Length: 30
Image (cartoon, rainbow, N blue to C red; front, side):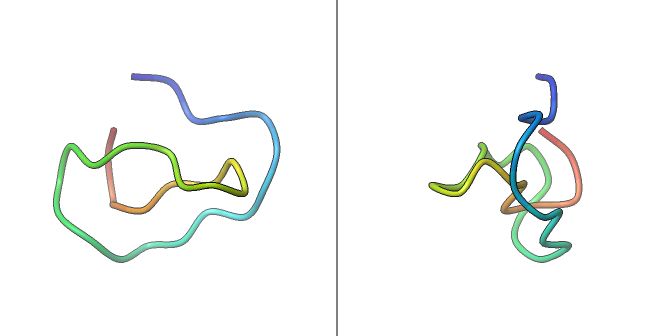
């Protein structure tokens, strides 16, 4: 899925994880 347009990219977590609560990624891909 797309990266949320707000929040930092957080390059941790499993591949395919979802956006975190601040709109960044909680994994390397999503």
